[in-house]
View 1 (tube, rainbow over the protein chains, first blue to last red):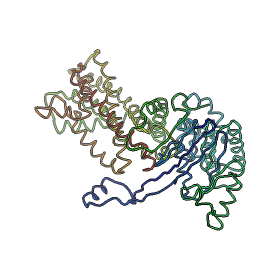
View 2: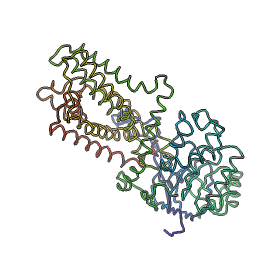
View 3: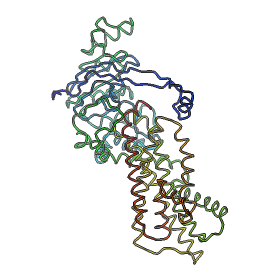
View 4: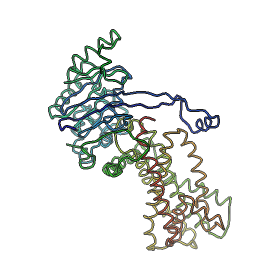
Length: 259
Length: 292
């Protein structure tokens, strides 16, 4: 892989089988076996033949409707899901913010959850100790809240703390899934500022967002995914325009078949 | 500032896989470097569990003590008298029960660790075996306070019944760390098996409730290893906890040394549990995110 690339995705497909049973249990499996029946399943093609290069220091936006395969793609890049076909090569350390409060325990204080969230993200204890005050300051929690259980936090406070933990890592590659929706307008501006700072440090950022303004404001490239395939890649404004037209008209661009 | 520098390779390649092991050396290095995550998860899990309880961590001592009393009553009512004195039987029962519950808690909490850690598994990449490992650490932390309880009961028994035989200090007590390590490894290995099964069949933990109950009755906890006759002695060897519980009784209650077959039995079950459980779990853990 060329040194200037942070991520290379080659003909990636992710397919998985989901059970149509309400719950997979030993009891059901034994009953099916005794009746010589097969499990009712459905094949989901979450990502289909996607090829993409992401250079170091770029900010890539990913847009698409629900079920387009955006989150599955992010999980595959992070090494959480395995490809069914093709391969993903990642050059650098990854931090993910795919959901808010991952690793958090609502019964514990904000300070305890910074430790848990930081360890879950891959920081070590020394790094967490060094960054705790910085994280608490970035999350802008009201006085004393850092030592209260996070179940007493508002959703905005919870989101801000989660975001602050994730971006404290300064990873080579940061994967964000709708995380910028955390907090109020002031915090969003602060988050954008942090994103710009990470970009200036030549970090690579991938953002999945339904907030299209986020994509045009922050990203230098964007892709549009639809039903697991990449429909288009280009400048964020063009991709967002095409996607908006699709949302209004409901038809894909004529060059869809070529992608 | 890179994370886990030196362990996770700078370039990672993700490709399709079958039910086979991922490269083991990077996996184990990553597991080792992130061990603090497992220990802190266990520490905070313990803290959160007793946070809202008025008696707090006192329950860690009360629980096993009350349990020991219940089983002692059951055992003395079912089998009163016998050649073994009441205090010796109580000592055997208590330390056997505490050790058995250490292993049982490893298995039952470990079995749930993957299905209950869904958000972590869906959103972070890390060696999944850290979650059952964290449950094993938590089980050990909950076992530790039972040691002073056992010593207290032992000394109180000696004070109340001066004829009770209490082993004085002996170098044989140095076998205790060995016994605990073997118990923990066996419990962790079995937890890996049941945690994997629970991902595929969500009623595994229900079945586990009955398995562990039967397992305890088949283990030398409510009965003494010396009470087995003839072919029944095989129970001490085919049971994964048979050798460690036999060793527990010998060292803790009688202050005796361990025989070579008992030592070998402890090591073999610990190694077999880790190898079989590890293979079963690690070869399937890349599917967990899809199945949760």
